[in-house]
Amino acid sequence: MAILISLASCNVGGEKKETQVTDTTSVKTPQELKELNTLLLANPGNAELLNKRAKYYFNKNNFNDCLTDITNAIKSDSTKSDYYLTLSNVLFVNNQTGKSKEALEKSIKLDDKNVEAILKLAELYLYVKKNDKSIEYINMALKIDKYNAKAYFMKGMNFKQKHDTAKAISSMQTAVEQDQQYYNAYVQLGLLCAAKHNPLAPQYYKNALRINPKSTEAWYDLGKYYQDEGDWNNALSSYNSLLSIDPSYKFAQYNIGVVYFTGLKKNSDAIEHFTEAIIIDPKYVAAYYARGVVYKEMKNARKAKADFDACIANSPDYEPALEILKEMN
Image (cartoon, rainbow, N blue to C red):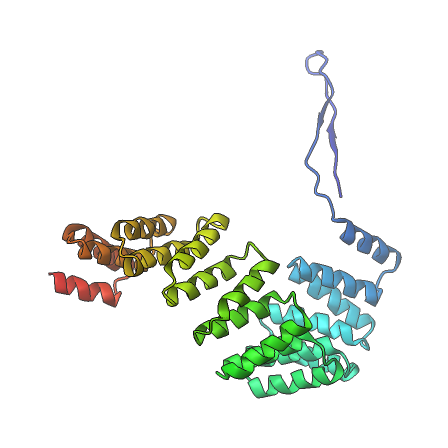
């Protein structure tokens, strides 16, 4: 609610003062929430409206008010499957996984065709790495909706956890066949193919970037693929595209340094980028170590030792620095 506070003037010592109005910055209630509040004022205790407002709060990360509303909705009407699904979501983010599971089981008991609830339960089992149980619920969902892209994606994540790369890739491919805008599935396909040095990996990352061109995750993964394959120029191009989006991405600066040192044999350029990584994070131990290695390669023992000492100052048990300092001494 907007609050306007007016401060009337008063006469001091008979001298007339001008009326002053203090204009405070008002905190406006978002229109969607305002409408829900108005409806609930007219229909107090309406379970459907409480569930809608609980979902609104959940999407805004206001988990306390979400829990209050959905609890009241269930008190008013305990027969709706969707209400227990909302309850499960907020319990899960509050690290009450046991109660979240109970709420999902109640939701499915009330409506055994509630695909969203079934997949949420499958996701919970995936989270605790009970893959066979998770796949069981995914298959249950697919019997109801055989075109459900999320179900295939989750099946792929289960197979990935089980280290069955072939089935993971197959499931992810089915997911993007059902939904060609499935960003996460393209990223996972890129990662799975990259692990096998499959040349299809870049295309999957590029599909992810088609959907989200500013994804630092996808740009980094694409750069790392090229780096691991020894394609130095494409690696640098990918990392630089990432840095144009987020100049503070220290891992990209570090990897550019690695490319220049190990791939292109340009030590000065490598030092420049390791230094940039350290500027971003002055406690970045790996960057100090890498820069020290380059200085050692350049026969600059003084600067090399300073960087290895910085490693130990930030991480006293950093074994690579301890070993190389012992060698140098």
